[in-house]
Amino acid sequence: MFFSRYDIIKMVKIMRVIDMPKIVLHLHLDGSLLLSDMLSWLRELGIHKSEEELQEFVIVDDDCHSLNDYLTKFDLPCSLLQTKKHLRDATYHLFLRLSALNVVYAEVRFAPAKHLNWGLNLDEVVTSVIEGMNVAIEATGIMGGIILSLMRGDSEKINLEVVDIAKKYLGKGVCGLDLAGAEAIYPTQDYKDIFKYAKDLSIPFTIHAGEAAGADSINAALLMGAKRIGHGIRVIDDEKLQARLIKDNILLEICVTSNYQTEAIKMKHPIDKLYEKGIKISINTDNDTVSNIDINKEYEKIIKENLLSIEEILECNINSIPFIFASDAVKDKLNDIFQEYKDINCRSIT
Image (cartoon, rainbow, N blue to C red; front, side):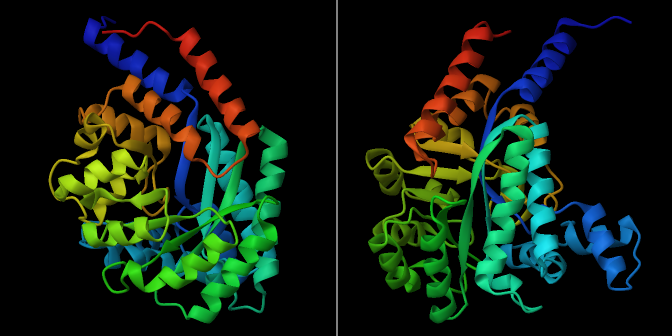
């Protein structure tokens, strides 16, 4: 069989994507469950579905035209993540899969308040997820932490309780906080008092902003003290805000595939323009199952669409290290991992 030079270059690039160490900072647990786990949990309830039937409930299709449409795919997964075992197993399996994709550090986020329907309390929910992560860390060597998401639309009382739980387990598996949910309906600025409380407790946080709402949402998140912004792609509409992100050294947690699916981006994704301007970027999948993606496929998609080169993707990983919610020792270890990879793969194919 004859392979052209183009074919060889393409195969080598795919191999390099697979081999490259990776950092994932924006990944939702409930949007990244194994289909086999969900089928098993449904059978426990006496509900028998085929994999194809299940996919209709948990994977986005062509009928998805907004973030609100996208969020409906979380209803079934959240309804099943209501026991200690389900939460522990889901987290364990997710970190195992990430390690198999050569992810060396991952921060997985979820909203504890969504998992209280069958009698668990917040402590039980959070410790179950931490336990699942820790077992995977011991088995694979992957590094990471859990981000607890506050939900737009939830009561201030429950969101403050989640902040308190984050403080209780900070450095013991929990690494930070997040604000997630229907951004267009519940403005970011409405949560400023809650994040002031979190900041007073010295809890790191990231905020979903500039996905379903505009630059004002990003500005509100920055005023609240966020150093990382989930998505943040609407910054492309505001050059003054772009300059602010560069000046204040803010990281955008970019998720190309889900941005297309929610129609936050309807044309070519602007990740390349943001990168060229010097804005710090972390590349993520958002929700592996809901978006039917994984981090290797996400990288391959970005390369195929000529958004970023494999070398630029590597640089995005390295640039994200100072922004992770972890100790300096973990950051130093990650820098060593990526430096070793660069030393071995110093010559790129052109």
